[in-house]
Image (cartoon, rainbow, N blue to C red; front, side, top):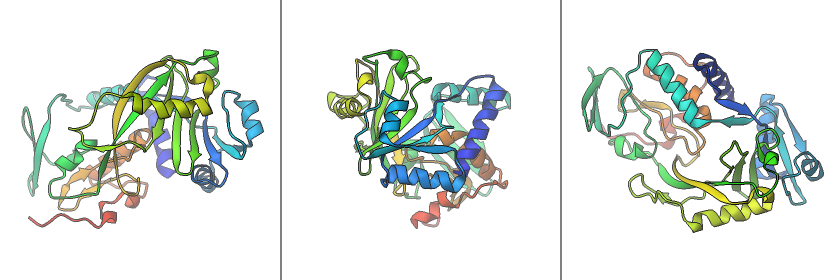
Length: 320
């Protein structure tokens, strides 16, 4: 939660500096059994960190958000500050600010390897070799290929996303009336839904994708990918389960405990390892970027990064 708070602050700062809208507040719902992992965990965190929230019983949830169809026995924790980031706009804003502050941006160059020594680092790409004092590895599903002898217990998971045109009263599913929601529909299993900003209601089953690699992944969605999402959407938000208008495939790079990796490379302290993010990293990107910069510049960071240490896996690379 301290990292979440920092991320909110930094996203707001990026909005001010870039002059672009990056975040829209919609509120957020965590739906499920009151003692289930999702609702109980969210409530404990909210109480510990003083986050504005309330607990909605099924009848109250139906009155407040009649779009939802929640079974008896399930409740919803509503977090008032939650909302939606627009990733493409966020990335464009961050790159624009980086360029404004002197960064040289290069695209379409595959990194093929790196070395580090006492004098600095070298990075080999398809376009040539670059030399610098420090290196940040933030390559997501390509991390296993770029970590060299450092073996981390990473798994790459194929995830699919689906957008649906609401079958009834489209305005009821827009951001003014529909919050972002996570629903623990059965123990430990979650579907996420997002309001319609013009491209449809977005829905995804969270962390149930097949394991793959960045080179072998199936980049197109299939009917088998979409069927369970539509089935769950029909139970939770039946009015949103209209025409399928778009789909997409992405990759989660996961650690065993589901947390980030933000640390110096144990054998190469000039190298910062800043990935993976276990499927929930983008909302933290503003704060993670700040933390990575502090690590790269050997500067203090106000938050505790120990939970994201490489050493928690008990892995160290061989010497030499």
